[in-house]
Figure 1: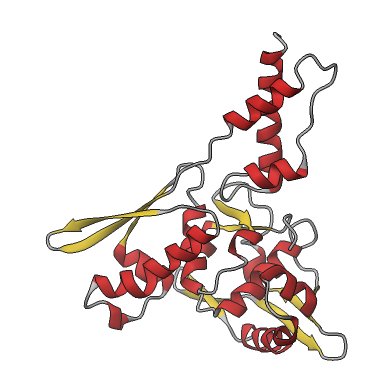
Figure 2 (figure 1 turned 45 degrees about the horizontal axis):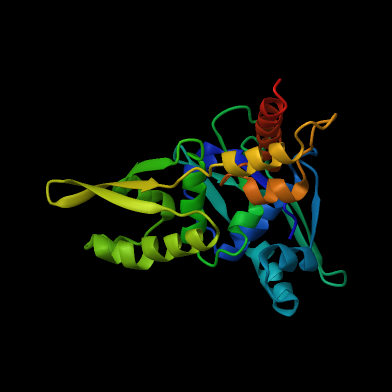
Length: 273
């Protein structure tokens, strides 16, 4: 799949009630990545092959999956400040050509266009293999705090955002077994080692604290700088290095800029500048 597909949405969207299945979520996020550098009101083409490649699903089954997802997404809404809003205004499946046409609603456009602060960003490839909507929603919450490595959230808010069934309320262990543990397993498999601690108020779990480490890049940067010590020109960061050493949730451009700064600094030191 492409490593350059970046999801960038407002924090409000991450924390709103979405009521999406995993296939609908996949379709929506793929659309958002394709709107990143163009007019967000553009009608987007998404092919069955592209969907299958991005999410590593069999091409044969992707036709029916995508057809069903676009049909259901048309009727879906999200809720912010108590008001229902629409995700899309156009969504048609083109049978003969194996692709769909989809267009974001103005309600969504304001949460994906021109964002300067209070947004969440991550590589779509990091969520591409998730099979559970709980995994994806928790991952997005974690990515809000990718620069600090800690998410502290009240259990009540956590249950609301992940839309956990009321029937699980009677025992936190049910939530842990059916929601949290499977989600953390998928997130860890995607390369983000997350740990959970809980805090109690009285005898009940009140707060969830998720922590994850930020990758350290200094060793490989120093080694790369030493290899080019004395050279007349600066070594440039390669695509392979960016893919390997990007921090969880860091965009391609963010990783490129950060790693180039670190490499330049180390190379200057190696050359005695």
